[in-house]
Length: 174
Image 1: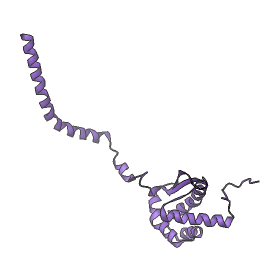
Image 2: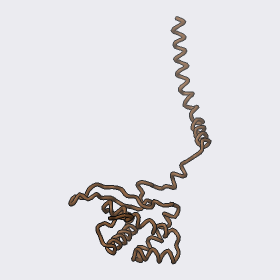
Image 3: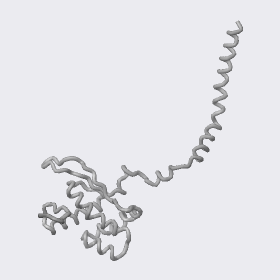
Image 4: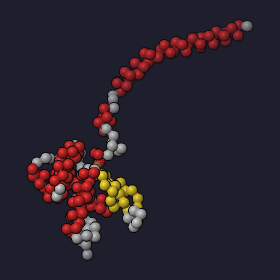
């Protein structure tokens, strides 16, 4: 019976599973996205998100804890130098799992797991979105500036209307 055993064993021994997750976490940090099965992606998300939370505070203690999980100096330095500053303001949810279909050989359900802040397609320049918001007063000021140029166009439109009304008056007089 598997009472109280909540995580996926992935059909491996404990040492094999920890080595697998450690290597996948290093690859995810290095490449910012990896392609794997859905089960491994879900297990990796549970494994790597606490490490990303630890990386937000750059202390020797946190570096040693993260290194004990990853066993790769390059991955730890990449995590603390480039990844941590980008995720500093995020309160969790650092990874995204996108299902990509089925593998050709054994029809395994495949997925793409990626770091959320490094995908430019889903959030291109999030800072620009914040600056595009304006109050109503700013939009009315712009409309007034456009209207200031518009009367010149309106005068030209009114003249043909006046001629048209004159011609209709002449027809009624006849």
